[in-house]
Every structure is written in C-alpha cells, then in structure tokens.
Length: 192
Image (tube, rainbow, N blue to C red):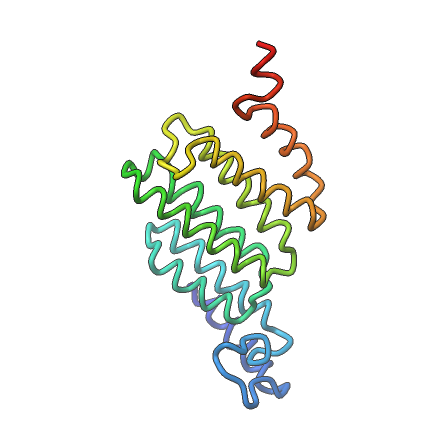
C-alpha cells in the first residue's frame, strides 16, 4: 500500500471514529466500525488486493480481500474479482496443469460466489461472473476433470446464468441461449 493510501486510510478512519463509528463494535462489524467511510476504506484495501495479485502474492491478496469484505461485505466488485481470479486465473489450464487442483480452485470459486451472493449489493453480477467462468472452463481445450464432465460444467454455468437472470442481469439471457445451442444433443447438433 502506498504512503498516500495509508495517509488517506488513516484520515478516513479518524473521520469515522470522530463521527462515533466503532462504539461497541467488533471486527465483523466493518460498516459500523468505519461508519460513513467504510466503502472508501474497503476500496483502498481492494487496491492493495489487486497490487498483491499483480506482484504474484496471491496468499496476501486473499488475506487482504477478507479484511476488505469484513469492512464492506456488500462490495460486489470485490466478490466478482475473487470469483474471476479463482475461475479464470487460478483454475486455468495454463497456470495449473494438475486437474485435481483445477477442480479445487473451481469449487473454491463457487463457494466464494455463494458467499458473495448472500452479501453483495448486486448478487446477480456475482452469479453472472461465476457463470462466465464456468463457461470458459467448459470451453477450454483442456477442460478440468469435473464430476459430471464438460456437459456438467455447461449445466452448472446455465444454472448460474439463470440465477443471474432472476436477479435482473439481462445479459444472462443471451448466454443461456448460447449454452443451449452448444450443449451436447442440442437441436443444432442433431441437425448437423
């Protein structure tokens, strides 16, 4: 974290304390602890998360992300960043050749997405991010070993797109059509 970020964070914390935030609160009460500046403090932590990922320090990035989420559990962008990171980077066949570890990253990403759906201000975007990541995994030249195979990954992506659509993400509709068209045994496959 840069010096400017640290100074800004300190000022924001001081403002939050001065406004009476933090009385009788615990670490899990991030929004109350930082009061009206919780989102700003959390945003600074998300900058630190991105910097840690960029420096190749994923353990630090995930740890800082947890503190950012404790401060602002509704941070949709943060939840999406973590799901995207796990599904598209950590579970990538280019980064992780071991199939069991790729599967573990995907499962972890879906757990993260479920947490995000419960907390995010825009749960549909978290669901949409999970759906896109699953679809990417299903179309990978070296798909991960998923218990239900590539068709199962597509079906899982479809379910996440359906959830996103229920939460008002209109773009999910187009992807639902695409997953139907590419599914094994679809009308398009039978007509070919």
